[in-house]
Image (cartoon, rainbow over all chains, first blue to last red; front, side, top):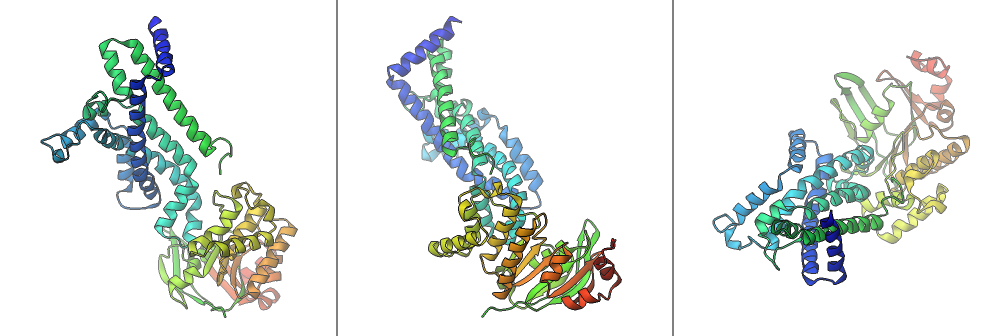
Length: 234
Length: 237
């Protein structure tokens, strides 16, 4: 019990003193996860919407596969990205292993199916509502997708938030491809794993509280900006 | 001068899950003015309208317009039985079809203001459309269809669930549209409205056209059994 209190005290001390390492790590965490989120959204939002409006032969299979990919184990993703980027791998020459770029790549792979799947579910509902109207307006496929994304933006925010939550809290993949190198690829989650391993529970807990607080702040900010709860459903 | 589009259905059949819901049907509509599609529930009125509009898949037969199909589609508008509101403001709902045409902003906002005034929603321009009342949604859907100045307007029960005053307003708007040269093809359950507006009537029953006649002839002396029973207020099955 005393460790938890010590953790809270340590967390406050770190934040209060604007600990340089802590700020560095936090900013890196945000940078990696937000970049991954941005890339994943540009892929997943149009793809999920496209999947909702397009009828093709293996659609059912594609949706099942997408839902299965949501549960992709991060460690396995890390392993595969590692193999691809390692010196002997196909992209070894680019020298990306143990860089933030590699971490972003791994996180994109992990959260894209999640965002796409939630997008698909939300868009399917909206599409059944809009279907007749948009067909009647003689819209092109691209116009339909953009109308759905624009009008479903509040639900899509939820999809993005789910993706962000998974990215910022993820440790397995970025540990493998990032290597947890101090000043370079150390982020909140890998730092917590490291401190726990070293037995420095207070610092680990402190970092943990900051991680949770960060998640809360980002969620609240997005909710406030998008006025999710204020305007009801329209 | 506006170009009238005539349409020709040739042996059109629409099947859903192996059941024939419409046809085989051959029909030619070429005049401007009001064409009223009458008939009991489930007769295939809505399906017929959707076939004409080109949003219903035809199992066999052909639908041909007198103009190239792209031009025909661009010149058409459709108001659905239950109005579909985009989850946007009234203003954005009115502007959307014009944005699709790629008009410039000044033109769009001018037409939007005009039409909002026309349907009495000027004060509600920034109000979310899905939260309007049923009658207001109905009027908004109509304005959104007419704002493109379509050659042909399809209306599926535009006045269902509306009170007398709203019906009068809508009929007024429709008459003006016809005077401006729009061809209107609509279904209705309201025989009074059919008498007030129709120039010609297509009576549909069990997926077939039972009678097609000018309005006066139809209402004075319908020749088919189904139609005369329908006009007499009997239950047509």
